[in-house]
Amino acid sequence: MEASAPEPEAEAQPAAEAQPDAEAQTAVVPESPAEPEPAAVEAPAPQASALEGDADKGHSLFRKKCMVCHTIAKGDKDRTGPNLWSIVGRERASSKTFNYSNTLKMRGGTWNEADISSFIAGPRSFIPDTKMTFAGLKNAEDRADIIAYLKTQTD
Image 1 (tube, rainbow, N blue to C red):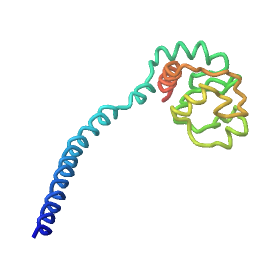
Image 2: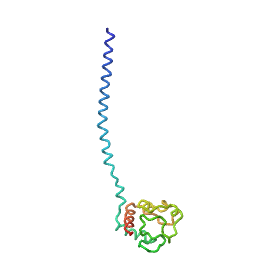
Image 3: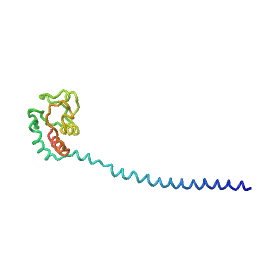
Image 4: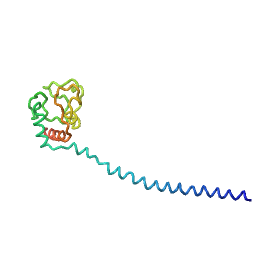
């Protein structure tokens, strides 16, 4: 009869082990809902607003940095660079009177804000054989301001 006594004790031990597992599972459950909250706080993208610039500042920067080679008024002739009237949303290499690099001609597409920003940040990085000798405008806010100004120069 003594042999039968240890068996009930063995059954009691697994039941005791099941309780800590249940406690561990309940401890994990509250942590899961807490984790998504910080992700939701980090979700807003301030970069989107960084692309919005000041057109007045852009006008001033354009006069200092771009007008040496580009015109901006509708119908003006090209200079060393093409006229930039209505450039945002315009097809690349679309001026009939300007001789663009072959790479720009073959690239195709339209000039969007992101491409213009990349181009004026480093023209030779964006299009390696570009004829544009401008070293680039490294300040993202300055580029956003110029793009804001360019967007006003359209029909």
